[in-house]
Length: 193
Image: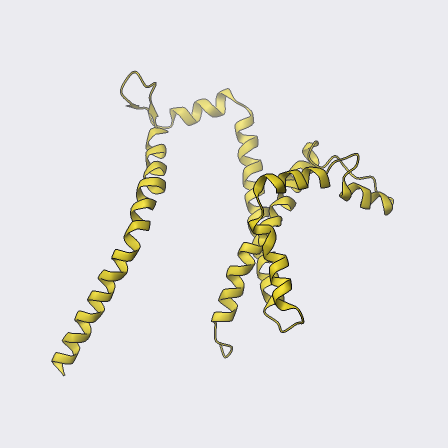
């Protein structure tokens, strides 16, 4: 009995080592190309450094100066936070809702999955041009459709009142990536759970 247990422990240890070896290229890339630069940037943000002299620790002085000198810093932080909250929550809701709908048995299921996922893989430049044309205040499709309903369409990207909303709506273009992950999760979970 002890010998069988010893063999199982050795096999699980070998599998664990193999797993770490297979993951090591990604881990090394992540540490050197992502995590390392992030930590370095955070540390350097608390220092005075002008390339010609060695870095000198000054604490939060850089952040205090930014807020005092530029009045738009707090506004940009507010807008960025609002964008992140709205965009992430809408991505979660729409991605999960689409995954629930596409997890049902409906006719043409593969076609619907392709239609909803395809925008996620379209080139960024073409998507930007598409949205600029759709949201154009004079001849854009969105304002034309609103005009047929008797509604005067706004300047979506040119006014502060509508720019953030427009950017959040444009970010939903790529909701298919999240939908695919949720769909894989829904199909991988046993139905009895």
